[in-house]
Image (cartoon, rainbow, N blue to C red; front, side, top):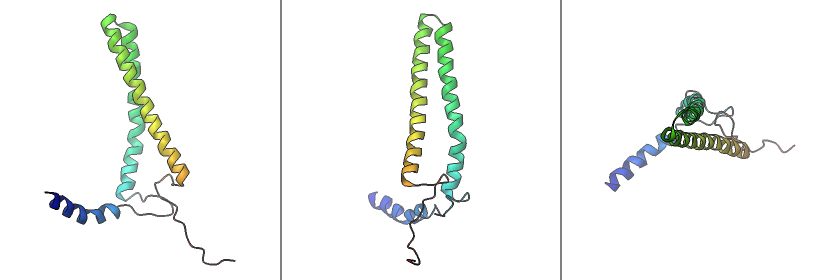
Length: 119
């Protein structure tokens, strides 16, 4: 079984590595990673909005419910705050790393070049 996985991995690795084209302007929109980035950039704001709505649903449940509903509402609010914090923290961490290493917004990396002339 290990030999089969190693063999498939060995032949599949070039396809994974060559799926991204590195250009000066960033990820090409037709590449696999470019399409994935486009999809994720569309989904992330929707997920953050859903987490905020989930938090406010817990707040409404907490304010309008009886004792059992208050506990349920408090739990929903805690999970909502944790979810919002994790999503925003990961987004901030990715932006910090991208800024630190000079990665363009489109996902491309600035490749260092050897100067053609010294003067």
